[in-house]
Image (cartoon, rainbow, N blue to C red; front, side, top):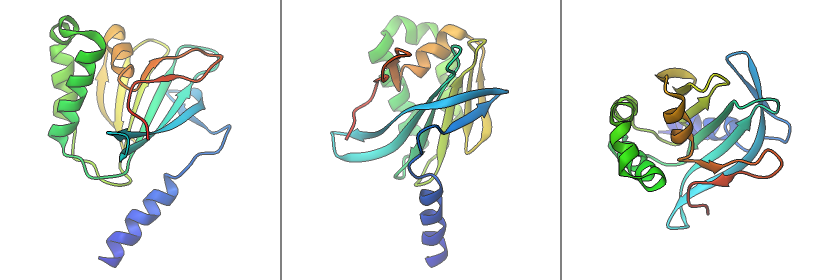
Amino acid sequence: MKKTFATILLGLVLAGPLSAGEAIEVNGQRLELKAQARACYLGFVELYDVDYFRDTAGPASCVRLSYLRDIEAATLDEATRKVFEERHGGEFVNRYRAELEQVGKAYRPVGPGDQYLYCVGADGAGSLLRDNAPVVQLASSDFARRFLQIWVKADDPADAPQWGFGRC
């Protein structure tokens, strides 16, 4: 038990708050940290921290979700479908049923310290990684962009992003 708690604590410390100017490199592109937020359900149930990275010279962007609690894979899948439908409507859920199923099948349960990183590259394709390991590649640029809108509904390069989730 002590070892497990120490491992989780170390993971939270390492995945803790980021400093201004932090960047990640994805597929040879440097993406700068643009914004951070904490996602909550009902305004107080803390779910995950979100780090939003963006290419300052192009369209590439990523969201990194650092989970704060245990969430089952089926719950992640259900929430993804629900938010995607709220954002884009039933027509797009039907159009992208195969892609949503592909993502849903790739989800695994998460716990404190686990991370998913979702990126839309300069070419418009999407990539989902779990704890830095590739999970799903999404070729459709329209779906990839719409999927990102689960977390970032809109982004003005000169301003903060419009978050797509409830915050604490």
